[in-house]
Length: 172
Image (cartoon, rainbow, N blue to C red):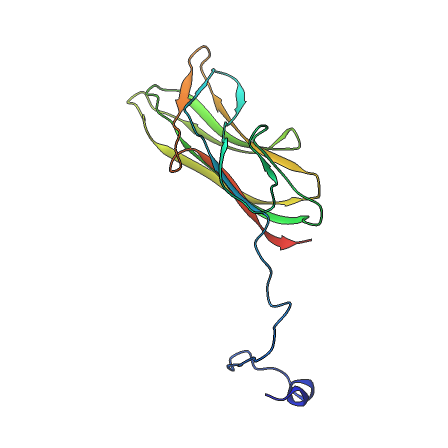
């Protein structure tokens, strides 16, 4: 299709277009992106919101996930809308409440709350996810809460178990 045809007519999006040059502005990369999992089991105390120890990275496109603080921090030039997820595999067997939470800049932003039944739910996986706006320098971190102090629990480790990740879906 000649350029003068595009300028003089509206584009029919049902048409097929064959481009021979470079197309720009047709989409953007979903970066920064990160995924980290727990390299070893984590024992948690009851009645405490504990940062989940996702200390082993599988993806970190912009070096924005810190394995020492367990935080993703938005790097310069990457403010926008982000998709995030937290997946938990617990290995205890009792009736207690738990919450998967996402903290933004040190304050609770989101929580997913579950009450386990006394028949036992050992070894089950749960997940929480969402979309949020993040500015440069904002950070998010996953935390986990177990009710019924002094009962404690264990989060299972491994690449297919407890993990935290996400990616940018749109710039601001």
